[in-house]
Length: 123
Image 1 (spheres, rainbow, N blue to C red):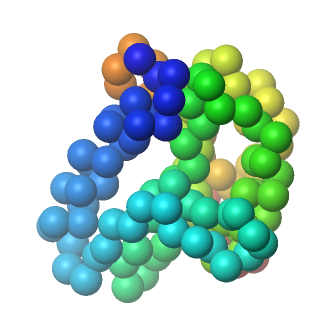
Image 2 (image 1 turned 180 degrees about the vertical axis):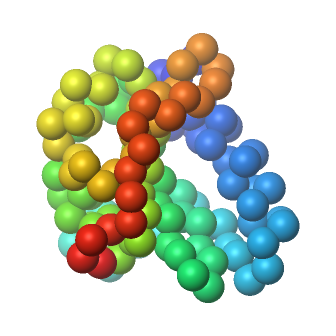
């Protein structure tokens, strides 16, 4: 199921935990306040000495109402950003997030890269 944040988080966290455990000086942080505007937190952030990679999760029961504000917050501090969402939100996500964001779909209990992003042009 991909109805709730926790459903998708169960798919996202294991590969990130593997990176954290194998790359020296890397931290995995959940619910990180981005310090941008009130209420903008990154769902998951992988922080290494060379990169801050934020992950925003939009499950089926979520809405995209706050996504533009979240885009601004992630863009201010993250080197890379991936939004992990469901097919029902894909069209809206594509309209809102910048082209440099990666988009990953949570689909039938697995993750599938929908669009590969690149490094933030102006962190």
